[in-house]
Image 1 (tube, rainbow, N blue to C red):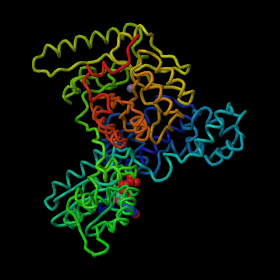
Image 2 (tube, helix red, strand yellow; image 1 turned 120 degrees about the horizontal axis):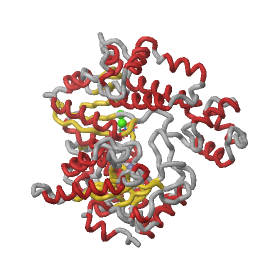
Image 3 (cartoon, rainbow, N blue to C red; image 1 turned 120 degrees about the vertical axis):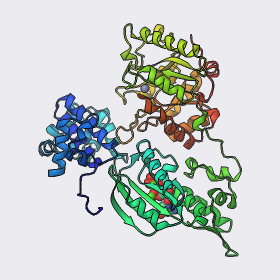
Image 4 (tube, protein in one colour; image 1 turned 45 degrees about the vertical axis):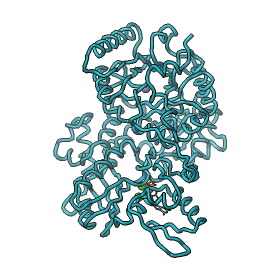
Length: 580
Ligand code: DGT
Ligand code: CA
Ligand code: CA
Ligand code: ZN
């Protein structure tokens, strides 16, 4: 802790209290409006870069969107008493772990409450034991199927267990900001991200930065004294670990410039990649350390200022960080057979986005302007079908036609087309919630499961692909990283059917979705299926998320050719399935 700064609760801890309060209220069947207000406040607190506790003490937390007087007062309670009073009270009534039950497949708040009240089960461990002993079926409204799912879910190592991993999408901007300020410091020479964030892993445990400097100590000092640092966890003359308000940990190492290449390679990982690289090197008479490569026979030691040269010296092409997971990249790099991975700049359009016509936050014109500013040539508006009933679909079409006309008549505007898309629901019975007649008026149709995720997910998706109007399946497994386990979709069958019917699958770029996963996307590529990388953006800023989708695609070895929307809209129209 920095001297003179009073110890205030960190933002992540504050946010957790509001989330837990919301969960416990939901279990008790409380007021939905307040529950959702607490969840929104938690999200806002997590996203805020400065100390929200400090803002609340200054009476300024109210200025944050989603935080009013009542919530500000609750934040002050945490500062004064360590916990929101309402939370303390509810924890005395409801065992806190019961709140985790309602996240299990097939369970909601009502069943979670019944499990606790009717069966007296209060911990996940007891629930797991009961499910495995088939002691749940026939109680609390639980059938054998749900019981099996509970047992399976609790047996899987959970995303939410173990040390907390943050989403890449929320972390990367902060990490880049830190790299940027370090670059501006006069003592710094080279600064790079390393570790899992450089490899674009979907979640990261801590954030690694590697630098060279004319004065290492000065740079480490500066790093530890940055405004957002709340805790210096460890510190030496060439390295430090600090914690920020939101609980992120940052590791900085300042390394000698002559071994910058070796160290960057080492600290980018992954561990499995490095282990395989070292084993391979040993077989060829080299020994690889963090700092250098030694020729074992002569004892000659080589350090490299550039990472490319480390790989080249060992007989490999330079390997993009996203591939460094020991998934065949070393063999490919030795043969000169690495794929030319897709790049962000290859995307020509976004094929899954929302506006205020459904649950988006920004109006259509603003979303479109932002898409044009990105240099896209086409852009599909895919608002949720259930929000476009009655005349609304037609009204939206008219707005799109008018705006398209305006854009086309503007001589200063590059060629650009707004596509009339739609996101339809795949109902629990496998049917779509929009008539074929309406679908036929749309340029691009995304079909997704938005309810009863574990109810026949494979059959529902396969069925939707049979429709001549469905171009793409949205977020196939419906996972929410850290919150909702993926539905048991047979992705292999889905890929097969996609090829057979001419339907595409997306890599949804939302930070907590990234669905398909890298492994699924790689399987799709190997089967010869083209994937769409889209943002599913609900606001202007969210269009940037495609960078995460591209990262996921690169981790899946996808080239430009493997990604559908690197093509022109004309080419896409030729490639996609023929409508009836
Ligand atoms: P994370 O932090 O869990 O998201 O994943 P990484 O890959 O960033 O892991 P981290 O921060 O522990 O270490 C960064 C890199 O440094 C890692 O990818 C490989 C290298 N590294 C760190 N510790 C070790 C180690 O004990 N053995 C080996 N072989 N490599 C290590
Ligand atoms: Ca790390
Ligand atoms: Ca680390
Ligand atoms: Zn969507």
